[in-house]
Image 1 (spheres, rainbow, N blue to C red):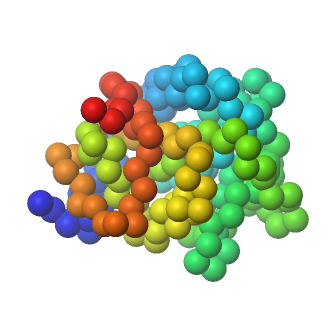
Image 2: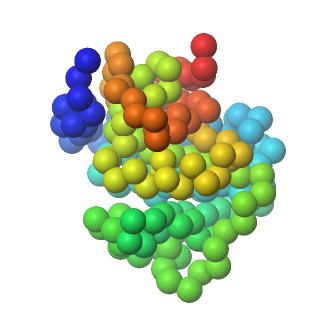
Length: 185
């Protein structure tokens, strides 16, 4: 079994080499599938990572959530914590942790009822195990919010045979790629 570090290195290489046009078209397929889920439709809040560096693009999810009159929140890293703040558009974002766009200071902390959380990751396996970027932000945050519905989005090239796991790892409820949906089997 490969280490998380080796998996990260390989998948990040694949992302860097990915065709930008394919990133756009596959992101759109993934977003359409995600937005068609009952859990998304029934949620009041959508907690959404803001994409960067050839991650699955989340702007279409934000647009659909706004069209459906849902409230949206995005993460901001403060020290070793990640806190979600309500946003109403991409204009509420500015460069933050590692250059990733984050909510500006002073925005109200988002609510916690009926939350559909869209999480990123570097790699996943068919059992929904996840390798993140190594900071543990989502695992720590989700350990205190176990009732949130967690959907991960990834490109099929981010799927690997097996992701090493640790006791603190939190799996998404579902992983959506441009080709399929991975649920607990």
